Image 1 (cartoon, rainbow, N blue to C red):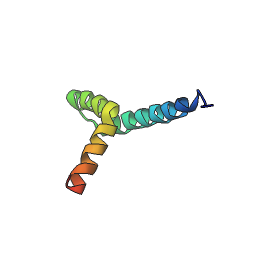
Image 2: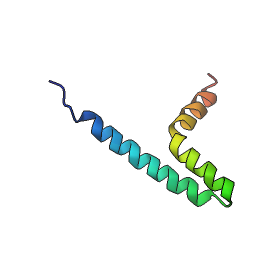
Image 3: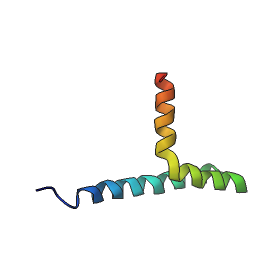
Length: 59
């Protein structure tokens, strides 16, 4: 029988990753719109990472 809590650990790790990305991008920001962009980057960093990875592979 499948463990019903298996997805919870992945969600927690993803949440910690988002929080870490928000902190990182927030520290790099210098103005109002950069802070707004930092929030967007923090929330969508996996999509940016996958896009850049495919771009680097030439796909």
